[in-house]
Amino acid sequence: MQETRLIENEYSVNLPTRFYYQKKWNNGWINIVNPFRATIVLGTPGSGKSYAVVNNYIKQQIEKGFSMYIYDFKFDDLSTIAYNHLLKHQKAYDIVPKFYVINFDDPRKSHRCNPINPEFMTDISDAYESAYTIMLNLNKTWIQKQGDFFVESPIILLAAIIWYLKIYENGKYCTFPHAIEFLCKRYEDIFPILTSYSELENYLSPFMDAWQGGAADQLQGQIASAKIPLSRMISPQLYWVMSGNDFSLDINNPKEPKILCVGNNPDRQNIYSAALGLYNSRIMKLINKKGKLKSSVIIDELPTIYFRGLDNLIATARSNKVAVCLGFQDYSQLIRDYGDKESKVIQNTVGNIFSGQVVGDTAKTLSERFGKILQKRQSMTINKQDKSTSISTQMDSLIPASKIANLTQGMFIGSVSDNFDERIDQKIFHAEIVVDNAKVTAETKAYHKIPTVVSFVNSEGIDTMTETIDANYKQIKADISDIVKLEIERIKADDNLKHLIK
Image (cartoon, rainbow, N blue to C red; front, side, top):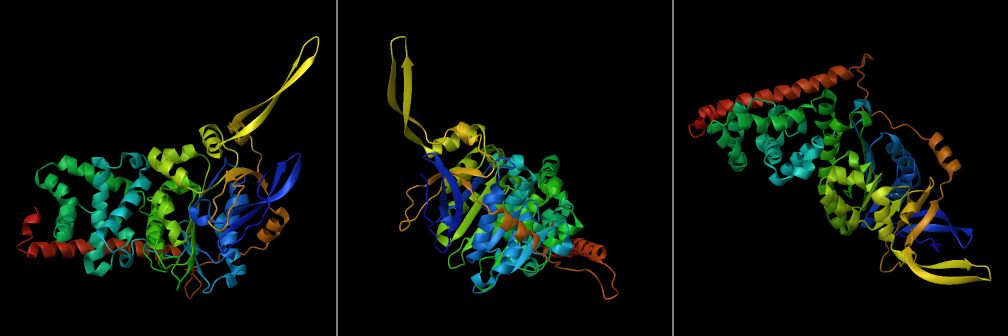
């Protein structure tokens, strides 16, 4: 038997179901009464996880006034749903949230946002966190080698550069594109500039020791392991999006709520994932605070991006009303991209779980999670004289792995968590999530396209997008060249710092 009551509250997500019990189909409900205890949605491609679960999360949470961050791997599938649902349900909010998009493929349909905005970096550890996120997204193999010399060295160097840009002229040039350009300068210029600031001196001491000790090969290796991955991100379009300041990343700010959709592209995910990972890490820091609006973080196709600190967000954000929903295909994907330890923490700290068809170890793990039940077994013996029937009981899996491996599209198994004052006796479900296909089709046909953000058309009607983006790209390069020139002159003029320049 499964839950047939509809249990709603101001935060709940409720999905109608059909389930088979006692030789007939019954109508029921899956009630996620506490989405803040996090949700995982599993399923092989085509099992219906986005259509049946993730899309419903987006729609129902907008209807209940959540601010929202959506990672849209196949842009603009989820973003279009969020945009149109917000247009319909603006009355759900005291202050209607603004809708923002980050999209590197088409700058016309993208807002600009600086993920390392100096206003939101209070400590050098924030710069370190940003550097970590970028480098581990660019080099997924480093995730399981954290602490190694050639992994930590480029991260520390990039963190020092980000913090330097934060303290130079009050952060005027503190953007990620400026940081990439600064790193690409000669190390004979980089190190004297950085070590001339007392707060960065200790960070750079291993590099300075190698430089002054004549270990040029080692130093070149340390710098190259930072430069080579980051050089893949040098792109005028990416520089354009990441150097502007259209909005801030505090999406659950009660005075300025936002719905932010960031779009990836499967063809360019290795490059874009690093930049988007930086937005992720900054957003996580900013939303996980007291006194903010209820908010939702929806990440579909989680393994395509490294989300540093995700396990900590799930564990600690419940009290700050942050609901996390993660969609991916299989636990093995998570282990491959996040490492064994971190993936285990994510699996075991999530309170609500949905699974469509999955196979292998994932099916076995889920079967164990749902436990065993006393099952009746009947056996019959027939011989020449008579036949005998015996009935026995045996502890057996409630939902066997073989059943999970053969689920039909739209059928889901899983379990939900409850609250002190909203007890759910039937937490485990094995049911078809009912989606009104006709209603969804009609809604989809009536959808408006996400509007153009910047037209790039001048007063004479000429499209100047390429020229504008290229001019921004050249300006960033010129800014860094000027900074390096001025800083070297300052060091040469200072008797206490002259020794830094060879």
